[in-house]
Amino acid sequence: MPKPTSFSDTVPNINGDIVSLIDLASSIGWDGIRELSIYRILYLASVLFSFRNPATKNPFLDHYHFSVVPTGPYSDDVRSSVAFLEANEYVRRSSKDVFTLGDNTLPDISRLPNHETKRDWLKTILLLLGVYGESKVYEFVIRDPQYQDNIERNLVTEIDVSRTNRSISTLNSFKSSFEETLGSKANKIDSKEYLELYFDYVFSKVLKGEFKL
Image (cartoon, rainbow, N blue to C red; front, side):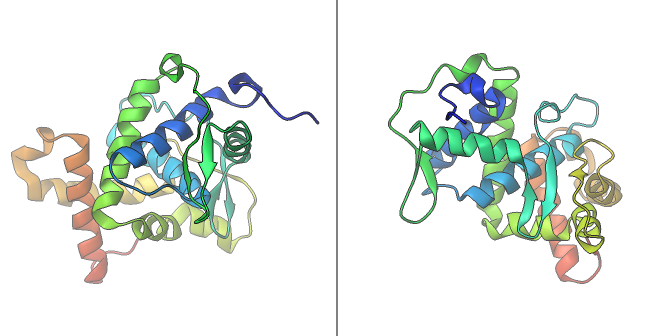
């Protein structure tokens, strides 16, 4: 089978998201992103978009289909995109096995559907992770009740990332008590601050043994 040579040979929207993710990571001082982290961050971004914006169509839903593997959410399309981007030198894998932008000039990805919305959201997620460290990505994934259920039953099925995702149901169960702590501020802060405060609240309750994810 010939190697894909253009964005349209794989999934251009995923290509664009991965490039945006790597570019954004560099802009906030990350040394690069591991391939496993790419899967986890895109999954986390998909789920948290539905959680934070329940009345808005999730721009990630049409292109991301994750299944369960022991290391975390996995997507064949994401794997193919990473392979394509690396083969065509749009991204580079370092000796530390992390990805940075490569030497090849990128096409104009700003014209891809919902590009700015997704890029802004990915930046929000990366800034959130910067507060807790990358280990929080894995911590969230392994605590994901839907993911754990699939692992326990050895199911090789797609993980739902829509509003009916069980993780969103769990997160929503904490939402009212969390927003009570914010008072009138709850509707005035941006998504970055909201999520930072929310996870600070949830993880503090988990550490105290008051909540279980």
